[in-house]
Image (tube, rainbow, N blue to C red):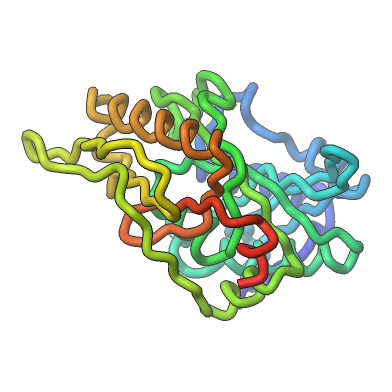
Amino acid sequence: MIEIRRPKNQEEFKKLVKVQIRTWNPSVTDAVGHRIMKAIDDNGGIVLGAFDEKGDALGYSLAFLAEENGKIFFYSHHTAVVPEMQGKGIGFLLKLAQREEALRRGIDLIKWTFDPLRSVNSHFNIRKLGAVGVRFLRDYYGEMSDEINRGMRSDRMKVEWHLRSRRVENRLKGIYRDLDGVEVLGSCLQGGLEVPVRFEISEYDPIKIKIPEDLEKLRGRRELEIWRDEVAYLMEHYMGLGYIDVDFRDNYHILTRRSMEEVLSS
């Protein structure tokens, strides 16, 4: 049995730090310490742990209050699950609890960033949760030293999770309104590795941007740099024209120029 709840004491905050270390193996300068977690939890933030029946921490999420253009929202900085428990729905339970807590406090928007070249994260954030990608951020964090991000440019997609929208309510129930996009980036195999093949830039709506099936297989190879550059070029081009990232299927991000209001109502 998994219980999602706030940490009860400093020892439980320390357990959440251990989850962070086991997930990312960050350097000392990159890690979020238990005292910072405690301060965020005590001052309006949302810190949630996933604990088993023995009290061991299997995952956690951390969000703090933020403001942009006069709008108050939660910024979700971390959601992590220990490696051996990933893919078992714990991350989904953490995000559901985070949403419930934000709504209880009268906040209906959560934002965060993720690596849009990671297919599992893209599916989880855009497809399953119903968040919408609103901005592409090239090398957002600069050089990172943790185990997952080391040696890769830290490109990120910023998403908005509109908690009360029909879109989010439907996605959380597994109800989807699929869009068929025009392909603008495909791929082919070279030397047994997948590489991108760019199609002609167009202004069709919606459009599809391919990402690699498994980013880890490309780590340390020139092919990874090609994927990073091609996807960044296309994301910056289309999002600069007003497209937003609304779905992820078959290893394609699907972008549309439809209004945010129309997207959130479906």
